[in-house]
Image 1 (cartoon, helix red, strand yellow):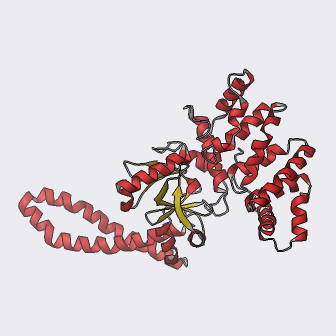
Image 2 (cartoon, one colour):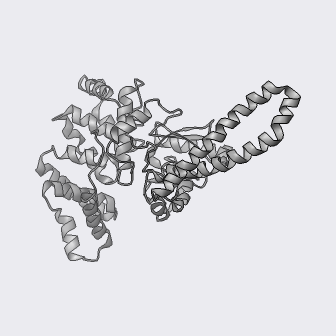
Image 3 (cartoon, helix red, strand yellow):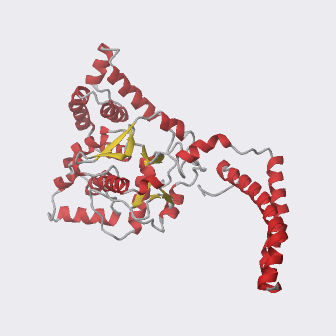
Length: 399
């Protein structure tokens, strides 16, 4: 199990050792003071029987003390020392600081700014990193994709492995609560309670991760978790805000084929409220198949605008089912606009698809050759190369 409290988990080892020390010292002090001063008084006031009932658990704790001491000695003999250097990370990154190595260093390299909603409202209480991978609330950092819900009344966040994280007391003020709620509502569907299935699904899709989430694609992990959860959840969700179950996607396919709804209503990329719901549109086109799928080629190309999003690879794979000449034409058509906007991620996405096709985008290749110091193009090529070299995703479950 990914989050089992096993002997290899440094954080839990540290806690256990510190807990043992505290118990050993505390138990003996408490027993000496209690037995010396309180027991005779209790016997005098309440009777001998009450005093004996009170003393019995103290004696049990007294005998448990030596076992704790031996346990601690064994830990020391095995060469273990508490990793106190990790404490700043564990304090700054609740829960996930245990499982994401060097996350605090990664966070410190990021720039944070107030989250801005779709309506343009700035939320100074919720800071978001430039990569949009991390958020900061009341001095604590949380991985955006791995936090799935918020309970305003209880002032706690919900994680995709079924945990409830109590927010810092500062986050219990009205302003903070309103801002956090606005953040989650702006991103689409979110949970106000934790699903009893959350941990089981998380454990199932992360088998083999060996307790380390450092190399995980958080977006893909979250999408896969959402899809598995939606398959168990019979509530009909908003197509543009949550992840649809397969049966719901099939329902939309039927409605389109019966002309009850129009396919184009699902092909406007900007209508999708978060990165997970975009995958609904890709799956819809996959189910529709050709020739109807041809109408969604621009939507799929829009999905290539950010190489880091969970829908990117799904869209790239789906585009590979199209005619290669059509794709090459689209690549040359879109490359000038991406360059004009100096959008590194857009260019990197186009370069990725071109490489899968075994094709070179003439427009970008010419710029690279003519202007060897063009920063945006150089970054785009480098970004695409680094994406190609990413570690193989550990998720067992396919989208």
